[in-house]
Length: 156
Image (cartoon, rainbow, N blue to C red; front, side, top):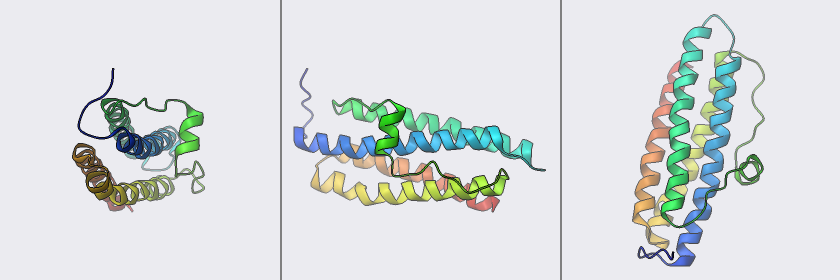
């Protein structure tokens, strides 16, 4: 059924394209955080194992929210590893080592990269594309990443 929510088809498509890239970034970051949870080593293992678990659980929710936002705009979410790797602006490459510090530095860089990407699109989505709802959604998502980044920086 045709979506009729006051945003042109062209603008909804452009918003969906932005969200597709963001969904890919969120999923890659989720996977990298799982990697940290599984492979962290060192005297702070238990604490950081739990820390990364809380992080990936939060990211899992964010992944779902981004995909559902796309669906609310009438677009399908990309949902394959290949599509995520094609769409992400993050890299699977990470800093060497299995210490919590190396994982945190790597993941922090990705969170900050996502924050910048979101910040660059908030006003565009609202002003140019006429989608205040997605702009508001992006603002909330950015705030989530800012809080995670602050917590990670506090460990360094």
